[in-house]
Length: 107
Image 1 (cartoon, rainbow, N blue to C red):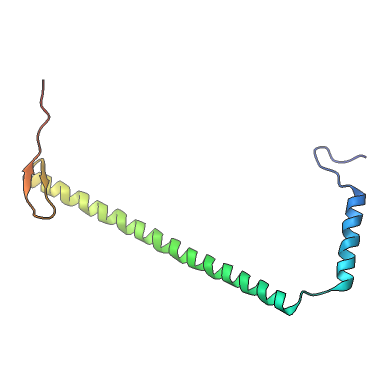
Image 2 (image 1 turned 120 degrees about the vertical axis):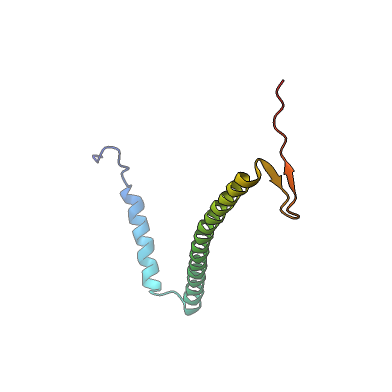
């Protein structure tokens, strides 16, 4: 059998059997039953709704991540101002108490 190199050749006998089976199905029924169609439509609709909700949540997540970056930037700026004012210290965020950071000991 000649064919395109690297391309799988179909077996004509198998193709003919598949076509014969399909034509028998088409002869018997041209449409799915109403209940089957309804079930199919409901499931596809549910998938679409969930995908839409997931897309909305991803957009919210994206916005929140950008807001978080802004908040972290503000925190870093405030920390720098506090360090400029008080030096290298630790501040208890509950009480506001300032403690000197221990400088590394040299041997």
